[in-house]
Structures are given as C-alpha cells and as structure tokens.
Length: 374
Ligand code: HEM
Ligand code: HEM
Ligand code: HEM
View (cartoon, rainbow, N blue to C red):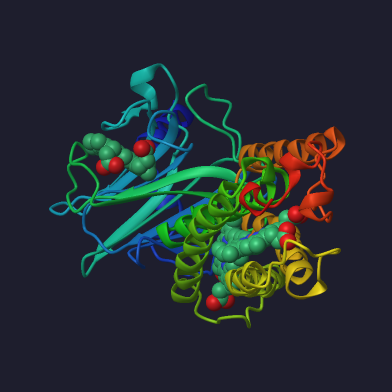
C-alpha cells in the first residue's frame, strides 16, 4: 500500500522538479538564432538521452521541433504561466501550419517527463530531457547526422497564438554542427553566379565557337549573351562584397579559396569585352593565322575563366552546404553543356577558319567569322 502511494505520488508530482530551472552547468553545444532572441543549448547525456534548453527573449511560449516544416514535425512547446509561474511543456506533433497537437491526443505518448523552466525580465528558459529515440510513433529520432529542425517563439503564453519569430535550420546534435539556411544575399549571389556563368557565359562561348554559320549575328549574340552574364557577375560580386565581413581573408579555407578563385574568374570575365573589342577592331579578313594578341588571348582568358568558374561554383555550393539534389542538377546541366561541346566538336564544325575568303570553298562558308566579311 505504501509502495503504491509512493508510486502514485511520484507520477502525480510535477516532474519539473527533477532538473534545476537554471542554466547552472554549461551545455555541450549551443547556437543563437533569430537575431539573438533565441538560444538553443544541448548536451547528449548518454547513449540514450539528450537534454536541451531554450533561452528566449519572450514571456510567451517557446518551441522546438524535429522536422523541416510544420507539416511533419515532432515538437516541444513550453511556457511559464505568467500568473502562476507554473512550467508547462507539451510533447507534440505538427502536421500543418496550425497549433501542434499533443502526442497524447494523437494516440502517441508524452515522452517529455523531465523538464523545468523559469521566466524573468521577459526572458523564458525551458529545459527538458528526452530519449534520443523514444520509440513513440509521434516522435522523431535524434540521429547522429545533420537533421532538420524548426524553432519558434511567441509573445503570448496562449498556445493558439501564432509565433512572433520562426526559423528552419539543420543541426548535428552529436557534433554540434549547425547549418543555417542561406540568407537572401548568399542565395542571390549564388543564383546570379551559377546562372551568369553556367548559362550565359558558357552559352556565349558555344556561340563564338560553333555558331559562325549564322554570319555576323554570332558576334552580336556573343556580345549580348556575355554582357548579360557579366552584368549578373558584377551584381553578384557587389553582393558578395557586402555580405562578407572579412573579404578575401576568411579563416575558413573553403571560403577563402572560393573567394580567390572567384576573384580570378571575375577579373578574367570583365577584362574580356575590352580584349574582344580590340580583336574585332584589328580583325583582318586576309589574315593567314589567328593572332595570339588579341584573339587567342581573348579565347584563352575566356576558356580559363570558364573552367575556373566550375570549381568556384561547386565550392559556393559547399560553403552553403546545399542539398545533394542541387549538386546533381547543376552537374547534369554542366554535363549537358560539355555534351553539346563534344557533339559540335566531333561533328567537325571548325571554329576558326584561317583561309582567305577567296580561297574558301562552300565548305568553309558556314564556319567563317562573318558572312559579310567574305
Ligand atoms: C499556434 C501555433 C502555430 C501556428 C498558428 C502556426 C502557424 C504558422 C503559419 C501560418 C505558417 C506559415 C506562414 C508563415 O511563414 O508565417 C508557419 C510557419 C512556420 N512555423 Fe508555425 N505555427 C504555430 C506553431 C509553430 C511551432 C510550435 C513551431 C516550432 C516548433 C513553428 C515553426 C514554424 C516554422 C519554422 C515555420 C516556417 C516553415 C514552415 O513553413 O514550416 N510553428 N506557422
Ligand atoms: C562582351 C564583349 C565581348 C566581345 C566584343 C567579344 C569578342 C569576341 C570575338 C571577336 C571573338 C572571336 C575571336 C576569333 O575567333 O578570332 C570571341 C571569341 C571568344 N570569346 Fe568573346 N567577346 C566578348 C565577351 C566574352 C566573354 C565575357 C567571354 C568569356 C568570359 C568570352 C569568351 C570567348 C571565347 C572563349 C571565344 C573563343 C571561342 C572559341 O572559338 O573557342 N568573350 N569573342
Ligand atoms: C563563378 C561563380 C562565382 C564567383 C565568381 C564567385 C565569387 C565570389 C567572391 C569573389 C566572393 C568573395 C567576396 C569577398 O570575400 O568579399 C564570394 C563569396 C561567396 N560566395 Fe561566391 N562566387 C561564385 C559562385 C558562388 C555560388 C554558386 C555560391 C553558392 C551557391 C556562392 C556562395 C558564396 C558565399 C556563401 C560566399 C561568402 C563566403 C564567406 O562566407 O566568406 N558563390 N564569391
């Protein structure tokens, strides 16, 4: 009977007393998010349990969820009641962009039984422990890999009140690695550069090399397409300068190498219009061979910049830790361009006719620099 009483009391007493409400021992890892308004800390206690803590600048609810969106997330929502100071923590599950349901209301189990928290000066601390793998069907597992999470907080205790701030990110809870989604500057820089070079400037190279059959139009197209690519490059570069604090002296080797390769690519690219313009001015239809300066210099600066742009782009993907699907799609696109190049090359379109116009046969005609010049 006494034993039964002890068991009943143990279950009925709020479990919040089991860990202190303060952050008295430092956590193994932490990350500060949402403009310093929300700090997440955690320690893997043993092979089976993790302790997490949220310290947020709010007196409303704070939340954490395993999953990449509210459409499928294993959530923990907690708050300290403004009136009673009682700490409420709910092991929940979110399947849509509305207030998450508690696991127990979904025929799951409450697996957050050890928790505590406090609220002071409009700052809320919620700490909780749970099994890395609870086995509950409404819970997800803290895997030893980079997993997607969502975090949010509200200004009100009322759980039906929508968040003031929310964010998606990825964390490896075992190594402490935190991967934030790219911000708009990084995204814009990445898109401008990968499209500017991968589509326009590479396209401009294919036009110059294989589209001379078009007559003078190849030249106009080469200029238009390359100028579009270069405008994207210049805007992308300006954005990079604004977004990077330690320009070209980054301690992260991948960032530093990307930046220096990028600078080489950009320098090559923006010197090309001038060299190309000189090549056009000095063009002599009677020439026997293609001069090294400026024509071949223009080709080789262009070719080297294009080849260097490929590792630069993939390094950018690496810095932003883009998902594998982006790597695969971009690699497939580049493979398509290389495929086109090889196809035209094998088809025997000679890119650089050197015969004098009056020595040319009809065979040479489509490959000449400009029909008007013949
Ligand atoms: C009353 C409770 C909640 C309501 C009504 C709500 C509602 C919404 C709505 C309408 C959106 C999409 C529009 C927008 O971007 O603002 C959204 C997005 C989001 N919510 Fe909530 N939410 C609630 C609770 C939570 C909780 C507890 C978390 C974290 C565990 C969370 C995390 C997020 C995140 C990260 C996003 C952006 C990504 C996504 O689309 O999922 N929300 N929420
Ligand atoms: C926008 C101004 C540009 C002008 C006026 C221009 C002009 C020219 C001219 C006249 C040629 C033909 C040379 C010849 O066959 O004798 C040429 C070829 C070439 N251009 Fe440009 N160009 C420009 C921009 C660029 C840019 C930005 C790049 C790349 C970064 C580039 C890469 C190339 C390459 C690789 C070839 C040689 C293609 C080949 O036959 O393999 N050009 N360009
Ligand atoms: C040919 C293509 C590219 C060029 C020429 C280029 C050029 C540059 C340059 C010059 C910087 C350094 C700026 C500075 O230190 O002030 C930089 C930084 C950066 N680039 Fe690119 N970039 C290219 C493609 C990409 C792509 C495709 C992505 C991502 C998808 C990307 C992401 C970044 C990021 C995240 C940084 C900041 C690195 C840091 O944290 O220090 N870049 N880029």
